[in-house]
Length: 57
Image (cartoon, rainbow, N blue to C red; front, top):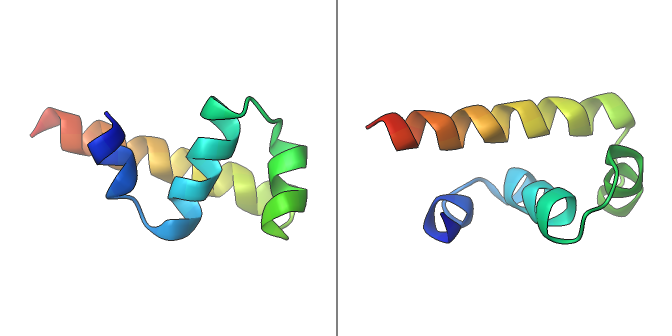
């Protein structure tokens, strides 16, 4: 799984690490990443889809 996370684009990877390893909320992650809340939620959705698609291969 860590290989899949490392293959994500930088923003997505950083967000997954903040959300799932550091257990931060979307709002906390948005502040750290200097993005708005809705952008971070969209990145999270896309990152999960990216990982899901790679697992299906």
